[in-house]
Length: 216
Image (cartoon, rainbow, N blue to C red; front, side):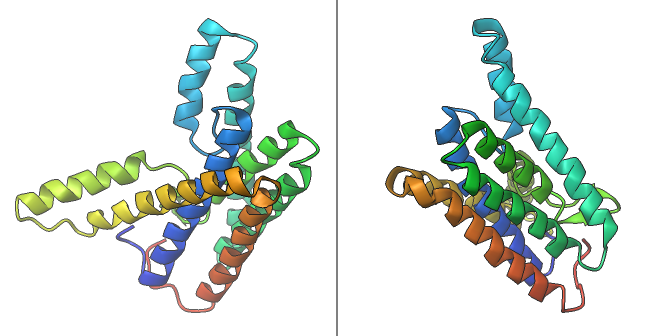
């Protein structure tokens, strides 16, 4: 996060909130599996392989779909450096629209499009062909935040690492709203996610009109 200028930092936090929203709704729809948190799906895979091997097909499919989304998103990102963020967000938003359209028709289709969208989303911030800011998983962000706290305690310079905590807060807030929306507005919840993606696409397009002051 410390390598981003303020507008891009805000965009990253908003993307994390979107990921939290989609992950919470996917978790509830899938009965305890995730659309962006692949560490959790990997743990569920291990448990299911022991307790219910047939059920293990679900986390396998979700993990595979996430990786496929990352691949597609990376190809889109590499096709246009100047408009990378908006192109990747257009892809993710389109997939969220597909997920919303399939929500009442096919649970598998809804989850598949959602997990593809979340995989692709991690290509919004790239540096030297690698993910610079992961917006759908927070373990690394929390590690950097903890390291920043340790540095602050020893009166050192945390070098912006404390800002990583905002990513976690963004994802947590999105998850809260996603869970609330699922329980109270079930029929339109996927469309809320798609609308959020569209709004962030507009924000990314505006950001890309200004010279990039960040390192990613």
